[in-house]
Every structure is written in C-alpha cells, then in structure tokens.
Length: 62
Figure (cartoon, rainbow, N blue to C red):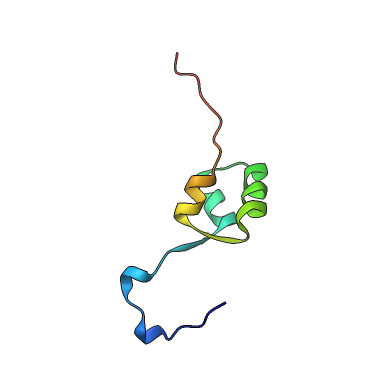
C-alpha cells in the first residue's frame, strides 16, 4: 500500500469506498450475493466495482 500526504490530494482523485456488507444491506442484495462479492472484491470496494460485479436475477418482462 502506498502512503500519500492528505494535503496534496485533490478532490477529483478521491473515490468513495464502500464496505461490501453495508452496500449489500442498503441495496437489498441477498446474503449469498454478498458473500460472492466479498470473495471477488474483498471487504471494501468502490461503488463502480460493486455495480459492475453485482449479478441480479433476470426478470421476465412479458
């Protein structure tokens, strides 16, 4: 892990990092999906990583 001086960071470099369990609870994902995401991404991930790796069940539209 690389350490950075906080005073030198700019706002556009910052990413919001979620606790995967909290993200799953807020979005209503099932426990098995939460466990799969933790295996794939670890305990913490960015919102983009979470959105790209969530597998939602297909619903029939017809």
